[in-house]
Image (cartoon, rainbow over all chains, first blue to last red; front, side):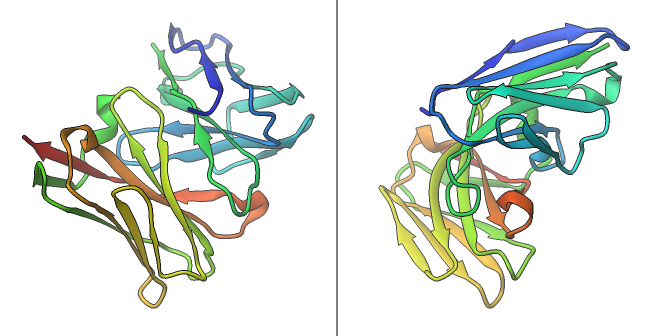
Length: 113
Length: 113
């Protein structure tokens, strides 16, 4: 398995609270991605990073921010969580964004009450 | 987790039979395709990929076929085993910003012993 660790694996929190999810990789891959997965939808890209301090928005970026201060860590922050952000969040990494697969962590199940 | 499999098309096969899972992709400009397997409570796992200059690629017990004329991708699993039970989905790289992927919603494969 690709060396990807997501933390926490499960979290329950209340509406309006800030939440930060962490993705840590040991593969030294340049590209990192945050997705959410919901029933009835395929994986949807939230934000991605193409290097340290280089990030860009994905399809469903509203309400989320990211930071990448080191190659190995990519953080996803919900500044003020809402119930619509209840989801399973996956981090992925890739060496080559155009011709190589993305490898995924095992996800964080986030419930916002 | 389990919610990934809800509302998905289901393919039920007998152990030992061959399985064929289909995927229609959306963008004729897509030039790289990936199949993933996702087991309950886990992240998507890379199975096999194929580039648009190929029609067929084989791996261990799996074969991917690409028909660019009708924008169709299939995954064939030989001698299906109970451990193959999972949700399978395809992804296409349409060549957009940073080579981001578009994911299909998936097919749930159920293997009967």
